[in-house]
Image (tube, rainbow, N blue to C red):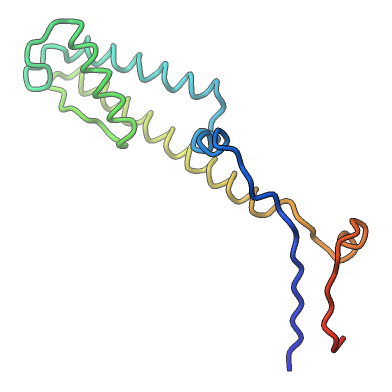
Length: 146
């Protein structure tokens, strides 16, 4: 028969609620999240300025309503991965292309950083050798056949 050897390391599985809720924000630093939100607000202002007279998206609303609806379009577009409106002007379309490029770059960076965090956490830590377990004074179970 085959001999099986298992090395089990204790882990601290308890995690606070606030740490659990903040996990989706780990791939970017707080400063970078602030920059992302700042760029989204800037994009909303550009969209309101370049395409605010588009009756299909804004229904001839007041300037304040146009700005808030532009913010809605931009934030919805960011979380959905693409433009959420259909600009009718050339400057509005150019702004939307620039926004789409921003979404592409940030989502790719977010995904890459998240993958790195997940791989790093699953690889690191724990007991890596018998010698380390002995040095730490861990209990080692050995089958009687050995």
